[in-house]
Length: 409
Figure 1 (cartoon, rainbow, N blue to C red):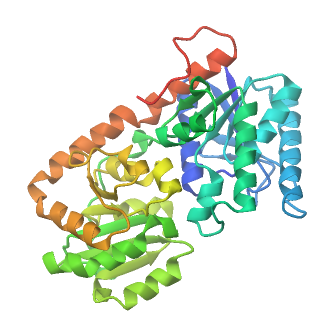
Figure 2: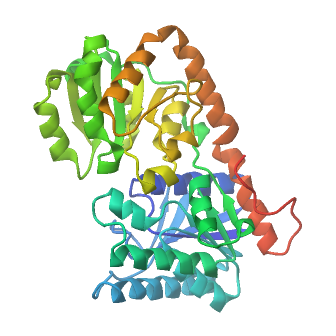
């Protein structure tokens, strides 16, 4: 039985898109008969034991906390994680190290893999220098940006195989001179076994929030600048001109929370914009059930053009209508007019028009929802897509397989 050790930035019980993707991967691989574990670096900040079982998955922790000046601190993190991988491998003996971005994890796994003489897969979920720009914690072209990019290049060069989550990331790596046949794609996906029938509308919750029939536009996720929620709020008065009963439901929180609430309070649509704050993950379906259309108005940037998000797929799996900005990451996930609608990014008027037009097409809603869920089932179901990893692992282990590193379906 193949043993895979996943090298991670952080994991469950912390909740994030990163940890949910990890959980889906590990569960799918367990379902395929693999033995899997995870090991996290020093950036996993949730208190807990050195070895922790969460949702039936085993995670090991790297002791200590990051310290020292920038630059030196990162190399110390790499050293600590590499040492922890080697120590764990003496006991558990994995066949493959599968590291997930950021590059610190990839470099630690490569260092450990060489000591252990086992192959390393490095998987890129986003370029973290671009994520820092999108989060307003970095600047494109800065020294930190260029150094982070160089670390990424080192990890890609040193790994035995590389995976990305989408075509945009792969194309960027190829443009840097890396061979295309070294890079496979494992698209974002959902565990469809966790999505049953959509939850019924909770009238008591709707009343508590002050939401009437609608249409109700929703966003559930983190409030980062690149998500474009300021454009969504700016679109609301224009949407109300065509649909006077419309409401906007914003579920979540993040760095832009205070500024978005201030913008909403000053809006002509203030009484139709509702913030819930963060809600427990187990309660999210109740909020999905209040919405008619989920909106994802991401701003145009390197990050949003290169990286496919997870949330629209989760919404599709919940039989939700999706309207999203026409950036590269969304175009990889949606067929405009069939599985959702796309609108010009950074344009509140275009956002309002797309939402209003979709709200007018009520007779088409069931067909769009069904097509979107089938699209997820056929191309983004982890139970199927995780088999792509098996092809890569077998190739690295010198065992028979049916092809080279697979591209996206």
